[in-house]
Image 1 (tube, rainbow, N blue to C red):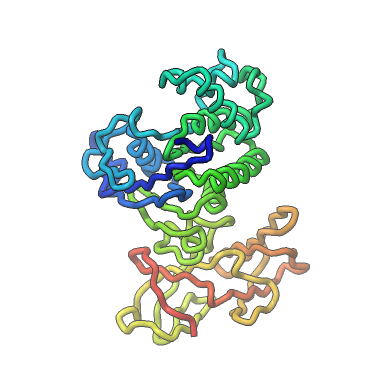
Image 2 (cartoon, rainbow, N blue to C red; image 1 turned 30 degrees about the vertical axis):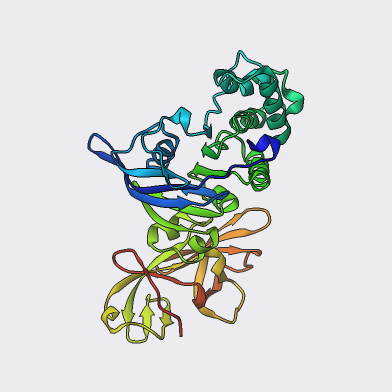
Length: 363
């Protein structure tokens, strides 16, 4: 029945109003979402936001105080982890140092009391999938970090799970290996079409891997959407700030008749509700939506170059305009200290005093 033999049993996962408290701390606060069959779903957020607790509740390693966990519509809230048919990959890999790679992958299958022939078939198939078939006779001390990570993935896959849960599995790898491992994970998941829920604090990782992302903060879901949706239409200031590298620029403004006035920048808008006039707002603009060359929708602003961070293929320019310093992503470094920026008015994000998105259109 398992995917090692080409027969995939995909399962949907649904959380309904999940709450989990530890004494006086609410780790997961009324969380609900549904992960579709074969979807790569990422839980993204800062440390302590509740994403790992949410994953452990799906795995059956934690029991919620209230709410339900459903697999394909079946309530598994109180079903033990061993009966949920999930594979799990942890941040630490949990690779046993005294066992060869083969035995590391085989151990859960031995505990399950499968036949020797079945274990061998599954181990070899899983090792082949993640390109470590040539490492089966080695010990963990003979492996690189990336190879240990593959062993952990192979062990989860050999179990032939309906759902794959991954908790920060790439965070112990160096930057180059992490990029390579991301690409391998995407390819593998698309080939296997296994329902995958992945926890990370790394927004680049989330954007690269996910079909959809759930951004979490303080135990709550802030926004669920495709990487494109959460980047281009963040529902609040937190999501706007958490997604994007370099981070979004924020500056204050006041709503006036027909425009928002930020002092150094006046932006005309055509559908401002009368109730907003006089209100304070926060304006956001991403560094890649500001140019040092004229653009069609650009509003010119004069500033002074303070710092130019050289990233090799591009620069992060820090440009001071009065008390505000804007980050600008640019292929070129200006020749002079005095610089004119062009702010793309179609890419502005406006947030209320309550830090939620205001949907108004530039004139």
